[in-house]
Image (cartoon, rainbow, N blue to C red; front, side, top):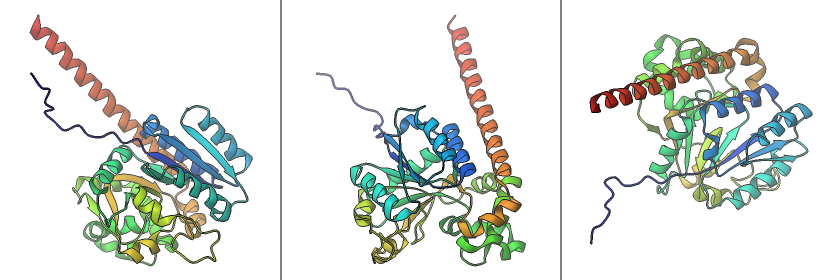
Length: 315
């Protein structure tokens, strides 16, 4: 009796849950959703939850449109604004409901780039059986984990500008915010970084939850989320799992080719907006989109030429 033998092992198809946290930045959420729509197959997600944290009428209207153009989107409004306690309850309930799923968290001021999801999930596949690496995150240049991954590259390619990227904590370093964004939008920083062939993964011992994927390993460790910030424990703020990683000697795998641009931390936002406004970021994303469209047309033309050549050879 004949048997069917698979020549290649089939790769499992992951359908993650996307969890977007939205609060008050209208222009940021517009760019966040637009980059998602342009660079992602949103039908790939099992479910998309948008936790609207005390948003105004303008953001509510944007989210209403986003929800009603897709079948897998649910917008959950909560108030008053603040991750804790109300939004924390919602986030905890969603994580509990999907404890057996793969979850991707995304903040409202994060703008994804082409192939971010494919690269991120590839990193998750590689690390999903690791006992000490329960978190895989995209590379966000303006983030502590992003600067950790980029450190050697920055030192080798910008030695005369070390003062720009070797300052204090990224969260409060307005010099680094401005310097890095100007490199990204004006000097093809990301493209140059990828061209160097960086190591595929970097492993800081702290979290980067702006755009990250995780599963039951991390969810069980985080839950239940604390009721308020005065309560002790690593889950007191759901987006701050660094204490949890440190307590358990866990690592965060940063995927060098999965790019998701975090705009700004709150203490640096006003300054950054005056020097690298979101209009400049939008133009940068537009150029990424234009390049992707040209690549797509080139691929389609190449396939068409192959079909025509094959037809000619067979006639």
